[in-house]
Image (cartoon, helix red, strand yellow):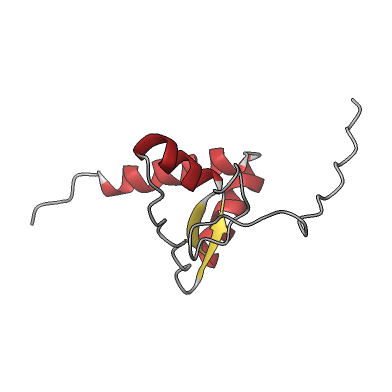
Length: 108
């Protein structure tokens, strides 16, 4: 199997910025970034975009999720022990958690 060489990094210094006030994203079309361009095509006007939410304290991004460091370590441990990918380890951990949550609780 041969690997393709990595593409050279693009020089973004001469790219232009979206014309919507406060956007700051790179232009996709003549005036707008991709999101504002889509808004203009769909609705005829460029409306403000919600800013990215700040990350919660004590969390890390892991496979598109915000998880605690301890949870990430547990999932990595499951992945190594069972020879699973990240996604499969997350699914496995969720199935275990769901099975524990749905067990009938003793009445007493």
